[in-house]
Image 1 (cartoon, protein in one colour):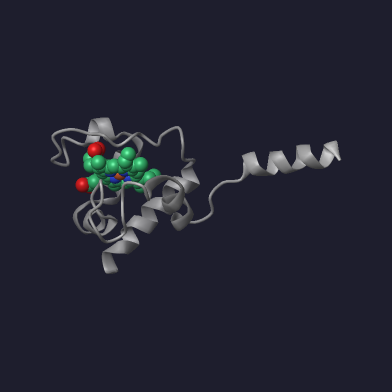
Image 2: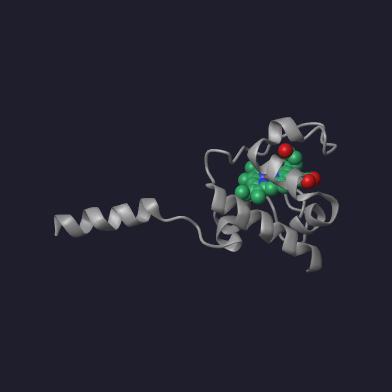
Length: 101
Ligand code: HEC
């Protein structure tokens, strides 16, 4: 029984979010919406107006990007220590796809 519990908790910690939608729901949804303005700009606005590098840059280091993007202040937390490389790819692709929504 103990073994099973240890194996299960290992699975939970090793689990990485598999799709952009999962990353979005887990970390971004409180502040961003796909197509409407929420606390932060919509992903559709971002996809239409930014390059992939700008999008990734802001997710990883909002404090060094917000002025370049025209914001007076930044309240978005950095996700550098939260997302792994794959999750960053997934969420960036998810944002870019909103362009056509
Ligand atoms: C606490 C609220 C909050 C959370 C959580 C949050 N954001 Fe943001 N985001 C903002 C706000 C507000 C801005 C506007 C600029 C700033 O504050 O840095 C922003 C700006 C951005 C921008 C740049 C906007 C532009 O004009 O190009 C991107 C890209 C972005 N967020 C992606 C994400 C992603 C992806 C996640 C989830 C992994 C996320 N954000 C989570 C609030 C948030």
